[in-house]
Image (cartoon, rainbow, N blue to C red; front, top):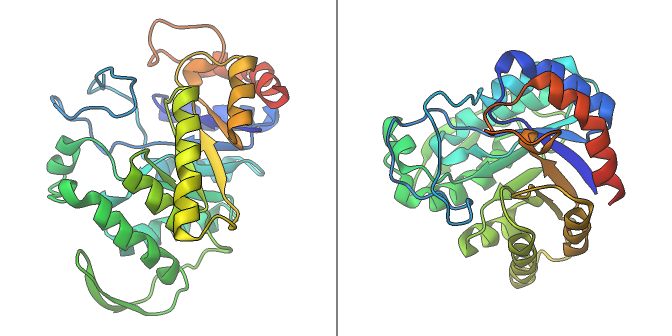
Amino acid sequence: MDVWLSLPFLPAEGLRELAQAAEEAGVTGLALSEHPCVPAAFASPYPYGGAKAAVLPTETLLPDPLVAIASLAASTSAVRLMTAVLIAPLRHPVMLAKEVATVATMSGGRFDLGVGVGWLREEFEALGNDGFAVRGAVLDEMLPLLDRLWTGQPIEHRGKHFSFAAVAVNPTPPQRIPLYVGGSSMGALRRCALLADGWVGANLSVEEVTDVVARLGEARSEVGTDQRPFAIRTGLRGTVTPARMAALRQAGVDSFMLAPWQVGERRESIRDLPVAAIAEALPNMVDMISSA
């Protein structure tokens, strides 16, 4: 099981230092999540907190993932990079195709696109996007479009949520961009089974991951993609131990996404994350996970 390092709640000015340390420590990839903005007040339920309400202070550090990844690609040479996840329905597919193709090109093909539908209704509203209720259907329409747009050829589309005359998007990616889809609802898992190269999860228990993997297997069988290569990449709620890593491996997890607050000593807050301390403790953590 390889190791990816997630990078939420970290200062933008420390990301390059940590990315270089992660590459030296043997980390396979780096993942950045997003919230374009943090509403000062919200009532949307957080779906991945183990029945706990979301705590998202307005001062939460969440650098733009695509901008940050472009910088990290220039600061590293081998480590892969991904969004985990990008809230794709907040974007127009043509703009998303352009941004992602540029990042993939600048990274020399070291980029995986992880997408989800988002959970924070107030964030959609703040951006003037009234599609929160239909965001799953929006994503279903977007994803097949991306591969077509990445050909660099003029593409015309007439759909329920997007329509545009023939346009070309360049640059074209140097190779096909692996697509990961997040979410644990049945709709999300069917979307993942039908359209994606893998599933990406976060902040779940071992039991929840095991359940998702089983349901994904069923969904892939139903849509006829069970013979296609597919990867499971997920984080874990709580403490990282050899026993829990072994359980994830047994469940079929290919890549573990390590959260920065799971590296080194336990801290009072997951938003109190000194970059230097994470970098120092990372090699031992990578060794433990890789050998579990």
